[in-house]
Image (tube, rainbow over all chains, first blue to last red; front, side, top):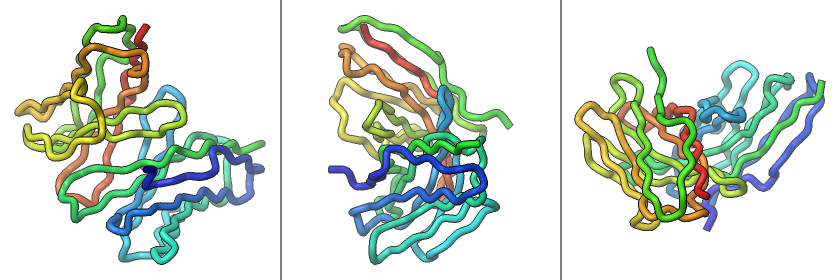
Length: 114
Length: 113
């Protein structure tokens, strides 16, 4: 049972345009969400997070939107740059669980075309 | 400060053997989690340790085990290796309490032949 889903395995975007990566979750106990970026042969690096008390968090070119009623979050990258080409994972955790356990989606491979 | 260090980076083992992977967290981080990444499966949670105690465990067979030492370094062990255990094993460290991000190491690429 995949509690965190990234239904688009890949996405291609032209340089300078907006990239929108989507993530859906099923567990209503999740209250903290993160996005990680992963290059080949490297570990995932943290990008941005959002708590369930917010519906938007912005950090430079990256903005994460959370729609709790739809159990959906999205990562917007504006403007997209070739260096953004990587696999993006969304992850969720439930603070009520009392432990540090992330549930990850299967990832979306973003390719930014120059 | 130094990031999360995982050793070895690459490993080739034969079916039936056992393997131990090591993770040194960021200095001051007391929580260490382990994940398995395979194509099409994303990152799957193995277990999490805090102060030498396993706090949570994912849905993996008992062949997968781990431990954490008093200096927060962690090891994971896989016994009786199977071909399907071939994967990238990632370790992440974090400060406690919850609500902060985890920092990942570069991973150990295990190939079982």
